[in-house]
Image (tube, rainbow, N blue to C red; front, side, top):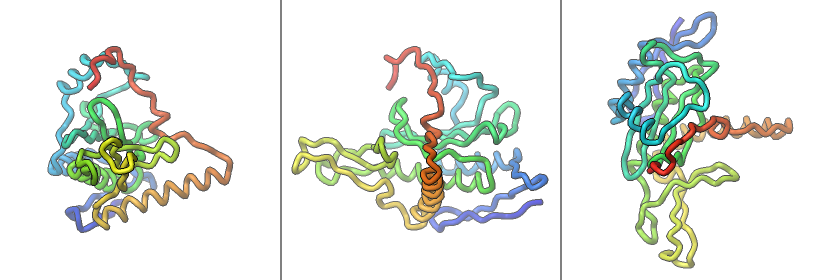
Length: 239
């Protein structure tokens, strides 16, 4: 069976995505991937080619932390010193999605080779494509509108509090600030009300999940921390 879901928010074009189920289980088709790719390219994202990947592998002498089967379709967008990278879980050569129980979609922002922001990973459940596209648009908007420090007018950077894992825009040019203190702005600064509401819905689900675990005495490790990094053989070549 299939149903049509309309993308929320008047700051984004309205689109419809077919949601198919098989014996009640959510599945994605090749046509779903073509739609996802078309929307990402229309936003301004570019595909990470084999040539792009090969240059990075050679420059850093990368080694995977575990055996990886197939090459995933991934995309990037760069502006103002940051790059958004999207990993879709779709296998190019096989023209199929990875097993949903073994992989998730990723949206991260890097400065050079250093990751500075990870969105909560995207499980391939109902609404996966809509959420993935909406986050892709929001991450692109954020680096397009990278803030200037209200005092020293330098670019502010993405800063994540190591304890709360909350992100902020931050400037640490304290010698140029009144009082000699860092300046911080909300990670959602000047984001549209529609997009802020969309993000807060997902954050509320995350908060409920953490509250439930806290009540049960559990302390799950964030997926971005669990995920083993690639081994870098040439760390001196990082940018």
